[in-house]
Length: 274
Image 1 (cartoon, rainbow, N blue to C red):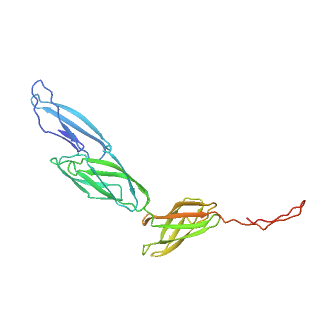
Image 2: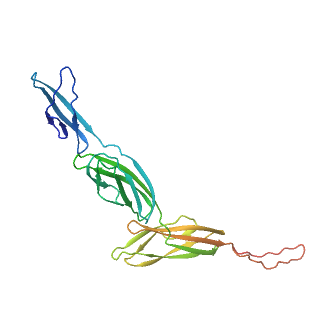
Image 3: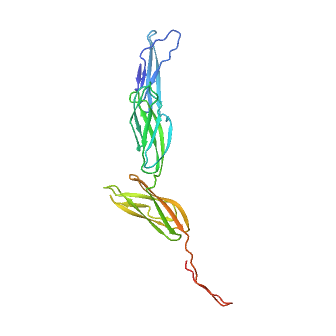
């Protein structure tokens, strides 16, 4: 007989052969973590005696089955599948995840006559960054559960456009980039990201609903160069928009001074404007 917290179960009656020891199977399944207690009373009907056992069980979070690490690119769907460890023989389990950018079927069927099922999901992020969480599989009949840890790193999306920019060193060039707000109701703020020291511009741009605004980026090189650079406009809801810049700065032209002449023993001077 069991008296105490729910979750414990045993067979109601069993027989023990003379001069033998019987291992009494006790099963416990919990719905949640915590400390569970019960009193087990075993009665010998032949001798009319009873033995009582105090049983306590500590239930904590189970370790993850596996950690899955993936790499993807923003604005591109990432598809992945993996085989789920068979933690039940037969039945349909519920699937959930703490990662909001995943889409998947929330049911998965297990059958002892078939190989372990594969779980498939799609991940889609609108901007670069890192997503982490768990994917859980829960059996509503036995209350058994397992989970997997998932980590995904997303790179920036491909450039929307490649913009060539040419100037002369120590002379500035203005790069004009149209940025559109597709929302019909909301004012949107885009964070503007660029790294190079010879690029100058505002760090954010605010755009009214359904409006296009010209963002001006100043390219002001101090020396001749030729390189690629990138500028990104980022909003958590609208996503990330990247533009590739092909920057080129030519050496400055040569300035020729007027001829200088002076008699022997004297000097002449001129002024150079820098």
